[in-house]
Length: 255
Image (cartoon, rainbow, N blue to C red; front, side, top):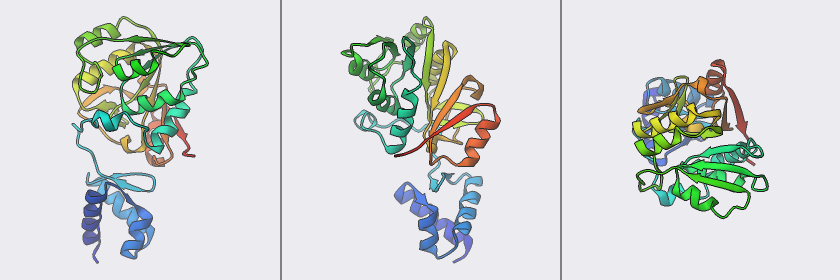
C-alpha cells in the first residue's frame, strides 16, 4: 500500500470512529509506528486532522456547536474529570469565583471545596441550581436571555458581568492555540472577554482535543491567562508552543 492510500484509509477510519490511535494504525497497516506518526504529521500540516498525544482526532469546524444539554451536563469524560479535580484545588477561602456553563464547568462542581466559604458568580441556570443549597457557597446568577442550554451570554448578561470584580475565573472555549482562546459564536466570545477583563486570575480548562484549534470568534490572547490546565493526552509540541508564549501549563493525570 502506498503512503497516500494509507492516509486515505486513515481518514476513513477517523470519520467512522471519531478517533484513531497510532499504535492500532501501525498494527492494522503492518508498518512502524514512526511511519504512522509521519503520516499523521503530514495530514495535520494539510489540515486534514488534529494530532493528539497517542493518535489523532478530526479537525473540528470553526463554528462547531456545543453538545445537546442532555449530553453536555453529565458525568464528563476522564479528561474533563482529571482537569476539573486539579482546577478546584486552586479555589481559596473567601474568593469570588466565576464558573460558566460549559460541560467541564458542570464537571467541576463535583470537586469544589465545599468545606470552604467562597462565592460563585455564574451565567448558567444549571450551575446556579446545583449550588443553591450549598451552605458555604454564596451564588450570584447573571441574568439575560436564557438559551436552551440554560446559559445567558447576551448584551444584558455582558453588562451585568462588567459590574463585578472576580478573584478567579475558570475560562474555557472550543479552541486554544498560540493565537489565544476561541469559541464558536461572537456573543459567547464577548461575554468571555468581559469576564476575563474583570478577573484577577484566569485559569483556562482545556482538554487535549482543543489544542491547536482556532474557532470562529476570539475570546482573548494567551497573555490574559495565568494558567492552563490540560490532560495527559495533549501533545508535548502543543504544550511547548503555549509555554513559549509565557503561560504556564499543568498536565492533569488520569487516575
